[in-house]
Length: 245
Image 1 (cartoon, rainbow, N blue to C red):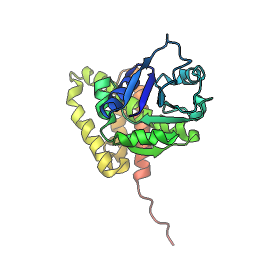
Image 2 (image 1 turned 180 degrees about the horizontal axis):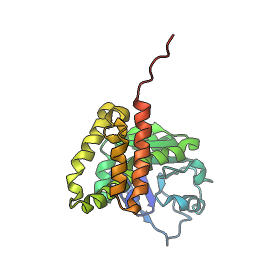
Image 3 (image 1 turned 90 degrees about the vertical axis):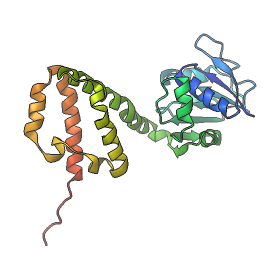
């Protein structure tokens, strides 16, 4: 049985602790922002830094290195240099929202993708949770994490706009969620290009213009950004005719 201590008792840290505890790991405990961290790596096989990205390096530097302990951060955007001066270091980032420990633990063990790098122990943890493992090099982590934020945070923000605009027509968000779910299912089955429907796909600029006219001024930039992305995707989906010989 391997032992683990976690710095950062937030949603990510508590989710991982619950998931690994269910697999038989010895979760020694949590340390928070007001705790002394010098000896945090003492007496455990793994020390996880589950803090916000902007303090990972500072937290790692405050922990005395131990050759027998692997130090892992859960950041999607940071490389292994954030964990200097620890010799055994790794990154383990789950591609799934972790809203609380109960839901998070279940999701971590549901076959999600983990982006890993560094010490092989990170890969072993991901595989023990039944995850799909992808290796992401340090140079690519910011790009990778941008894609992750678009896939989750930006989609949620767009649905916030749906809720506001729908309310102006006397409807609630629930009426539109089946549309969103079906569109995501189509993307999974067909890919984004084939799944795209609507006025941007058809080149129906009059309809797009009517939408803008109907929206409050504060909602127009978001709509225009989405329409531009849809237009870009629609143009990529149009097959190019072969050149005449």
